[in-house]
Image (cartoon, rainbow, N blue to C red):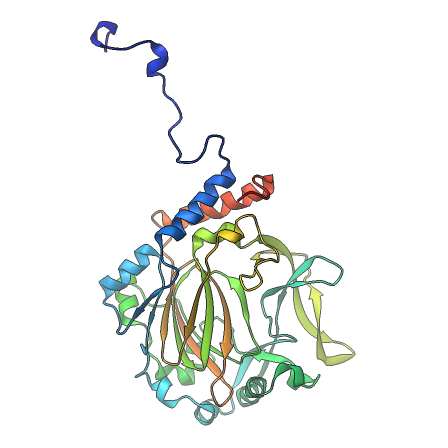
Length: 365
């Protein structure tokens, strides 16, 4: 126990009273100001382009990227895969001959996306799914890729098809093709200490776009045919993406015209939390934080491999090869929910939502 005469130079009790720690922000700063500072500081300290590697990283090198939660591209990382050497229209039709697959159909290539309604409001619309012969699916997707959408007929052939089930389909309905790709990505399997949760096959055309979203997976994405164009945002940009709860619906054929899809509101009624801001149309559905985002744009060429870290927002569009196809394979490794990353990312998201709900900083820089 310290007694008073053991302290020298004390001017009064107010001198030893604790006070708020400095924040680095101006006096009177709000939650909005703190979030803005978080986003701008991140972007000041991290480049607006990602690393490009010329060979696969070692497991240790890969783990450094995982720890930093930063993406990278391996140029020609899959150049020697059998899939890159074999897959074309003739080969895919031959190997998958007589097999039926699940395919997503939409009128505008907008599966799993927010659709604005003419009278106001929005609906999160899932695709109409049906089972079709793979050869028929392939022919329809090729037609989409080789024919401008504006000239597509208003018929079943004009509906946009995308094979995108995301349910480990390469080890299930596309198992005939699985031997043409590695069962796992060696550097990821060793570093993360487990095999992939899912290996997915994607087949589409330039008519389809995947809306901005995030996944709870460490993602190794491999381009086989055509090109994919990614728009990337890090988890710290969660307050920028305008996440809202959106009424859920599903495309379904019209009873009077089965080749015409209409939006059916889901029953029972449900709402889906989803990003409503589009970095390619930044003035629409912007939040007070959207202007501080710095989207990263990456194009994957045939044979390229992308590491897309967990919780990174990504929007994806496509370009086809000379046969009218865009085809990719991806490996999902489950996110490690231990440690601080998952919790901190959730805190950033929640703080942004609370700030906007309270209306703090509306119109502020």
